[in-house]
Structures are given as structure tokens and as C-alpha cells.
Length: 154
Ligand SMILES: [Zn+2]
Image 1 (cartoon, rainbow, N blue to C red):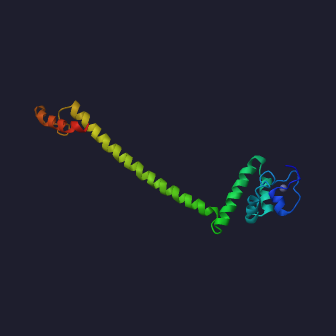
Image 2 (image 1 turned 90 degrees about the horizontal axis):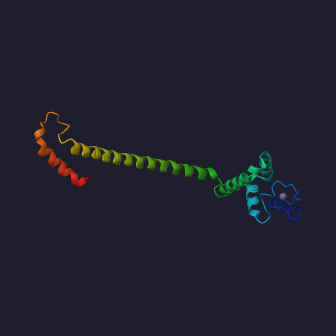
Image 3 (image 1 turned 120 degrees about the vertical axis):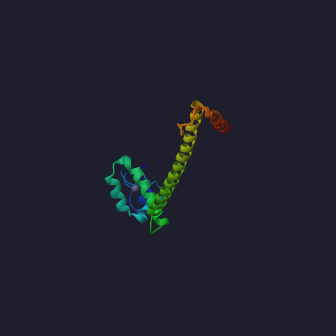
């Protein structure tokens, strides 16, 4: 970099770009719009203060967040990025509701399948009807008919 070509911030603020300019790594001169928009919304001195308070490895993320928030504020002067956040939160809660409904449907289907799966082995393993313990074992043809009715479904 060097002090010869000023960064986008120093160019816009019409000042000399120092060798340790805090803006230079994040606002290159070939992208003047990026600094212009954050300067318009937050102000250069606030951005400088925010960057100085952060460790160097977090500054790039902070700058991209500031650029995002500033663009959202320009697009939507009333709500800014809060508009996008609440829109997305709405979408999340709608999708969570849909997911809960779908999970309840899956549970219903599983319970139906479980109950039919539990009936079938009972028919096969125990020919006598469990619901009527008093039924004498010689009613086998009746149970057999049940079994034959159910067997195509298995
Ligand atoms: Zn600079």
C-alpha cells in the first residue's frame, strides 16, 4: 500500500493516508462506495473509534457488518437491518410451526403403522383372540378368516 495512493476513506475525507491508517486495510481506493456508505450512516470518526476498540483480527468482520448495516439503513431508512432481521425471524417461526405440524403428522403415521404392525404378529403367533379371553379355542376358522383378510396388507 504505502502513503502514495490514499485509501478510499482518506480520499473522501481529503486527508493524507498515513502508513498505519486504520481504514486502509478495509477500504481500498478501488471501492470508494464502500466507505462512502458507512461514512454517511455512521460517520468516519465513529467507525475509526469502533475499529480501534477491536483486536485487528476482528476488524474485517466488523467492517463487513458495518457496510451491511449501512446499506440496509439506506435501503430502508426507518427499520434498517432490523427490518430484515424481523422478516427473517418471522420466517423462522413460520417454518418452525410447519416443522412441528409435519413432525406431528409423521408421529401419527408411525403410530398407525405401529398399531397395525402390532396386530399382525398377534394374529399370526396366537390364533385365539386376545380381546376375548373367554372364547374357546375351537373358534379357529373365525380367526383364520381375520388372518386371511389381513394378510394382503402385510
Ligand atoms: Zn487512509
